[in-house]
Length: 114
Image (cartoon, rainbow, N blue to C red; front, side):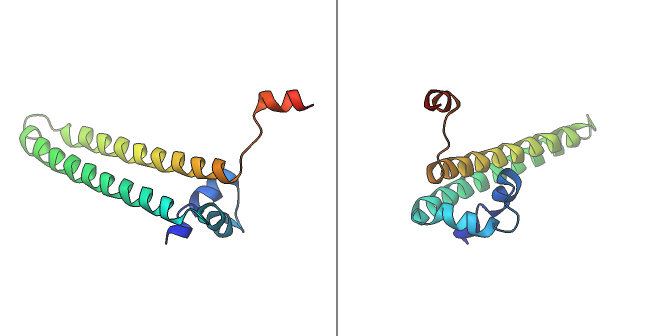
């Protein structure tokens, strides 16, 4: 469900434990199409990259593992780094929608107001 897309990020980045679901709903409310299309596009791109990385990893492992046994560990690490990159992408998207819905006062502007 698109309305629940940011629940985990609300818990981990905004310390919203009890109201994480309602926080995610508030971020998506009025922007459902924009959030859905970005999540869908990122999911398709991620699936394509994951498929290509798995194919390349399988080919590299099949060719190099008999010669260099550590190849499987190296390709596994590369796979982990790719998954971290996608996590960062979704975190940035959460922060973007959070900033749009809840703009924060910049540090420099706060000093000028006081």
